[in-house]
Image (cartoon, rainbow, N blue to C red; front, side, top):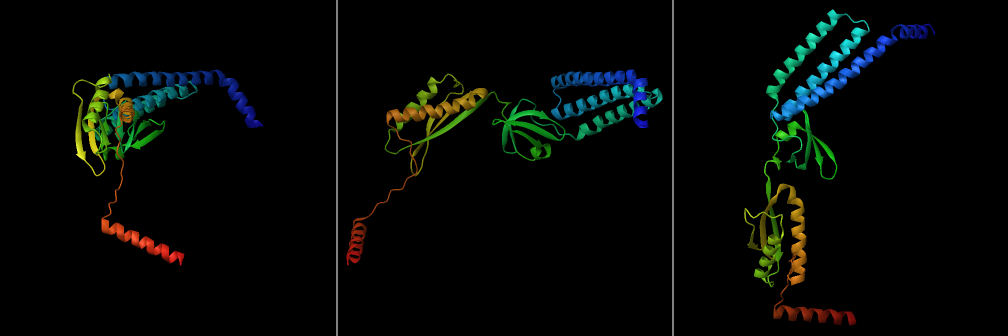
Length: 278
C-alpha cells in the first residue's frame, strides 16, 4: 500500500510533466518518420544503393527518436549536461558507423520495385536492407533472402531491359504439312498487337527429333506484356493447329516385326494354346 500511495503521489505531482514528455517523444517519432521518408526519396534520386539508403535512414531514425527521448527525460528531470553528453556520443557513433560500414556494403544490382530472379526465386523486390532482401513472389509469398546468398548466386534483373524475347517450340508430326504449320505460327505472331515489329518475329525449323519436327518462333514484346503474351500464343497456336488438322507430336514407339519373327510369334502362340487345351 505505501508504494501505491507513493506512486499516486508522484503521478499527481508530475502528471503534467509525464504527459508533456509523452507528447515530445511521440512527436519526435513522427518527425523522424517524416525525415526518413524525405531522406529515402533524396538518396534514391541520387542513385544511392538500397543497402546504403537503409543504413543511413535507420541511423537517422535512431538519432531523431533518441533526441526526442532525451528531451522527454529532461522534462522529467534529467540534467542538460547529461543530455548533451549522450547526444554527442550518439551522433558521433552514428557518423562513424555510416562512414565505416558503407565501404564494406556491396551494391546490389537491383532496387525496390524491380522484378528479379535471385537464388532460383522470381519476384518483385520490396526492400533491401544491410542484411537481407525482401522479395514478393507472384503467388503472394514474402521471402527474405540473405544478401550473402544473393551475392554468391546468379542474378537476373528483368527491369533493365524494356523488351523480352518470347521463345516457343512446337513439335509437329512428320506426316503433317510443315509449311502450313509455319505459316499458321507466323500468322499468329502477325495478328498479335503486342508483338513488336523490331526485331522482326521469326519462325524456323529448329530440328528433327525422334517423334516430331520442331518449329520454333521468336518474337519480342514489352517486358510488362511478356507473360500474358506468351501464354496467349501457346493457346492460340494449339487451337489453330487443332482446327487445321495439324497434330502436336508426342513421344511414341513403333514396333516392326519381320515376317519370320511374326511367323515364330504366331507359332509360339499356337503352341501355348494347345498346351492350355490339353
